[in-house]
Amino acid sequence: MLVFAIETSCDETSVAILKHNKEILSHITYNQTEHKKFGGVVPEIASRAHLEILQKIIPKALKESRVKINDIDLFCATCGPGLIGGLLVGSTFTKSLAIGTKKPFYPINHLEAHLLSPTLNNKNIFPCLSFLLTGGHTQIYFMKSIGSYKLIGETVDDAIGESFDKVGKILGLEYPGGPKIEKWAKKGNNNFFELPHPFKNKKNLNFSFSGIKTAVNIEIKKNKTINKKIIKDMSASFQNKIIEILKEKIILSLEYLKNNNKKIKNISIVGGVASNEKIKKELSSFCKKNHYNLIIPPKDMFSDNAAMIGWACIQKYYLSKKPDINFKPDPRLSIY
Image (cartoon, rainbow, N blue to C red; front, side, top):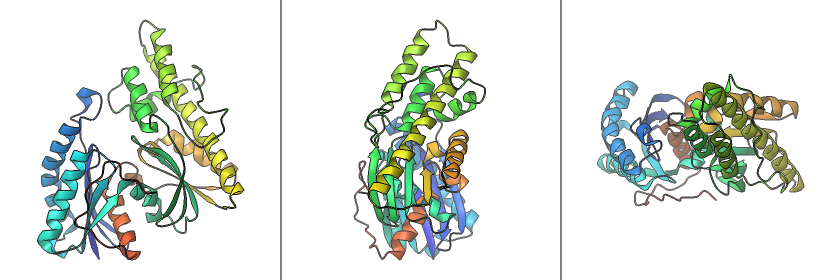
């Protein structure tokens, strides 16, 4: 069975062709660079770029996979959540191909695709505690099985990836700020700046990152100039505080699951922010120390990508979910 997938929820344009046995025949992800000069994603520019890029990379993906469009068995695309312009471009493009080849179309929630991405390279991960860490979402799920998820915590303001980008902007770093902060943090002092730990005393499972961003802004404004030392130390201090918060939320989540008679062995981190090497290293060590397994997706499936969309489609097919060519993209589509 061959699956064709498209992901266009934000500023990554991605196409993948894969088999039901987990073999990825082609996977092309184009990171739009048009937004750097604006310091963030411009929705209208992103949607227009998706249309132009798809016309270039779809033929390339078919050639690379040695597959003809009529050989595809299932078509799927991200239908939410995300920027409505991008969702419309990707889903309409894919629906057109499905109609033209008289094949079924599956609408995919890209958050669910993130949650399922570690099942591509790991066996028997359920039940699992999953941390979804992206530019637009920060959520904690208890995953009982494929298709059975319970949201137990989320951010009340900024998403974790959004906070990285905003702090990067305060430091004068190029968009996106996350990778730049990770790079500068390697040479900085983790404890040079004292930053707040929101909700530390509340002991709940929700996140808040806007206060940290404000604290960074206040500290930076105290200095007349932003030199390399400040950038290094603030990047390290900010990243270290994020790791501290994640560790605390893991502990609180495990207590919550224990109190609700839920036993797990696996903890997964998914989404673009989960690709941060320092975060992965620290959480892996933390989980190992506490006798849990840290589960992560394949290297090229952390950020928004079409391979995870295609893999989620395969899971829906096996669960006997019905295709839906009439599904309307929803920028606020939820999975709970």
